[in-house]
Amino acid sequence: EAGVAQSPRYKIIEKRQSVAFWCNPISGHATLYWYQQILGQGPKLLIQFQNNGVVDDSQLPKDRFSAERLKGVDSTLKIQPAKLEDSAVYLCASSLSLREQYFGPGTRLTVT
Amino acid sequence: GENVEQHPSTLSVQEGDSAVIKCTYSDSASNYFPWYKQELGKRPQLIIDIRSNVGEKKDQRIAVTLNKTAKHFSLHITETQPEDSAVYFCAASPYFGNEKLTFGTGTRLTIIP
Image (cartoon, rainbow over all chains, first blue to last red; front, side):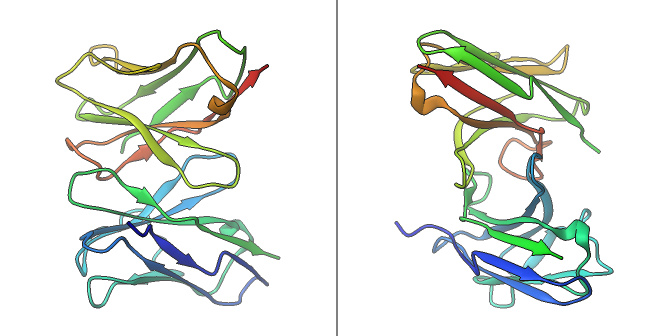
């Protein structure tokens, strides 16, 4: 079974620039999550999709972060404009409802 | 919202000894408590989980205990091996499944050969 795919794996940008991350979940997984993992901390849920609908985005900084999952499969997470404190690993995960979350390899973002 | 605290932040044990990691949570409505293992540079992977209707669960060398009254749960690894070295995260969810997880800050476990 193919795992969760993410790209790019690494990204370095300057503050105030924009960046986008892409995630392709495991085939058939209706639930998709984006997490932010700052160095030395646990993952923090940013947004959860069920198919193409948002289930929870209470911790998403909506003034600069946006996410979409238009066809209920792939998803993109965008940051515009980026701040220094956005430097982190952005993890995408997918699951069948109420079952184990499978994480992707993550995108390491460095904002300078 | 939920707050999960995890201790210790680092733990070193001799190979073959046991390791215990503890977590406390704040929301009495939490019902699902998974543990994830994250090796250096790799993705988190679920290693064991427990639901609030169970007090203990075991899978080979790994066990998890839950005390809902005290709002804490623990991971126990027995007969530790070098490949157990990793960062371990606990998490809590108000649902009976993998939704709205709040993670702890992680424990870096080092197994000394």
